[in-house]
Each structure stands twice: as structure tokens, then as C-alpha cells.
Amino acid sequence: MSRPLNVTDALCYLDDVKHQFAEKPEVYNRFLDIMKDFKSQQIDISGAIGRVSKLFHGNPPLIQGFNTFLPVGYRIDVSGDPLDPNTITVTTPQGTTTQTTTQSSNTPLSEDFKPGASEL
Image (cartoon, rainbow, N blue to C red; front, top):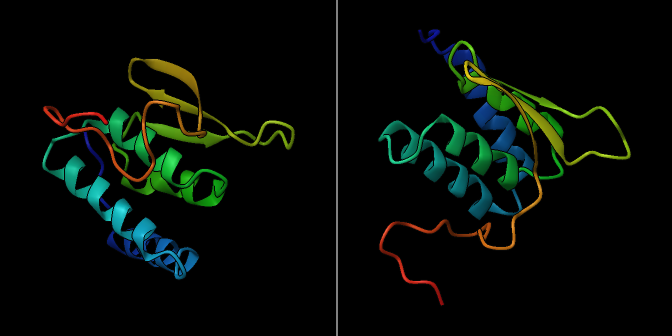
């Protein structure tokens, strides 16, 4: 079951992202690419959550704000612990997991590996 997207909230969120990264338009463009990949089903909800949380690492309000786009049953909660600001809790219909927003060593922030893409 999906919930209808609140267009006003979505547009406000997009404005927040654009404003936050005014000096780094590539981050905003990367976010739009993630959203396009999700809409075209090249990535699933979990993939979108993972990519957005890593892209917005260090910016809890934007990570939490991504909930605007998630269907019923999915939720991101950012750790309130100042000693562990990089941890998020992701709730899905399958259960709850804890993840880190830090970039993994094998997934570059600037480019996600595509099937068939060669690694350097």
C-alpha cells in the first residue's frame, strides 16, 4: 500500500536540498539521479534509502526529511545520540535495521556501480 505523495512537502524538501547544497550543485543533481533511478525501478526502496543517507551524510534533517517520499511501512530515523550521529534506523515491512550513513569503502559517493560497469 502506498500513501499519496504530498506535493507541497515534496517540493519544500527539494528546495531544502537545493538550498543546502547551493555551493555543490552536483549533490542536488545526484539526489535527482537517485530519485529517477528509484522511479524507473532501477533501484528499490532500500537502495534509495541507502544512497540518500550516504549522500546526505552529516545532514540529519535531510536524511529524516526523505521520509516524505517513502511509502507506508517505511521510515528513516536518525540517531539522536551526539556521540553516534552517523547511525540511522530504517523501518520496513520486513523489520527494522540499523545502518550507518558513512560511505562504504567499495561504493563511491560520486558514482554508483551499474551492472556491467568496469571497476578501475
